[in-house]
Image (cartoon, rainbow, N blue to C red; front, top):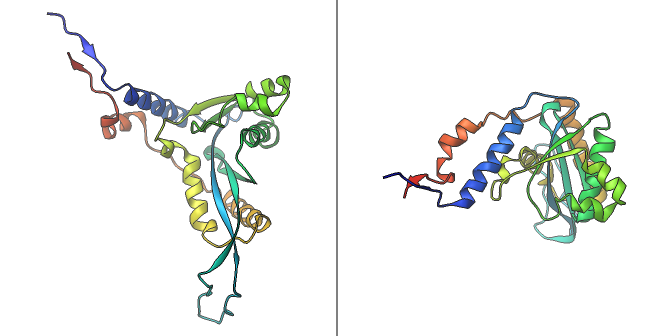
Amino acid sequence: MKEQWCIPEQASADFGCAMEDVLEVYHRPDDPKCPLVCFDEGTKQQTKETRLPLPVRPGDLAKYDYEYERNGTSNLFIFFAPLQAWRHIKVTDQRTKIDFAHCMRDLVDLHFPEADKMVLVMDNLNTHKLASLYEAFAPAEARRIRDKLEIHYTPKHGSWLNMAEIELSVLQRQCLKARMPDQPVLIDKVTAWEQRRNAHGSTVYWRFTTADARIKLHRLYPSIDPC
């Protein structure tokens, strides 16, 4: 009798499809006319000291009181081009659709004006839509920006595939652990971190391939069994 085949978990199939798409993008050769940029965002709570810290003496660590005063939060958009060893942090009050749209215009007009097309990897957040461009700009301008973007979304629960998330982790460990009293101080700190990382040519060397995924993450693929 002829066998019939069934795929029981469509969600897993969607995950595998999106994952392999991103992995294929990561292994394309460098093309200056179509640079790869990963995009993500994070937040930082700003805190003020309620008591003056103790004076620092030679050989001692700085000492701060555990109490603090909250002073709002800021959003941090991060652009990361691993093949160019380049990143940029944009600090904003919010992360709305309008903010996202302005980030995309900055990407194509300010950061990579000579590129024909931007290959963009990001997660599937509700603001990360091409429709956001039409809410921020006139139709002709929105279409101009849209035509320069080739978007590849990481799968749901698969944001670890976004190399910008790795850079955010480095930023958190190296810069954001300290208390930041207000947004201007935060901007100064992350700008200094960004310039230092760019000057040193720091980047991410991605080695995980589709072949690796099919072996190590085989449980995320649907099983194809005869019915």
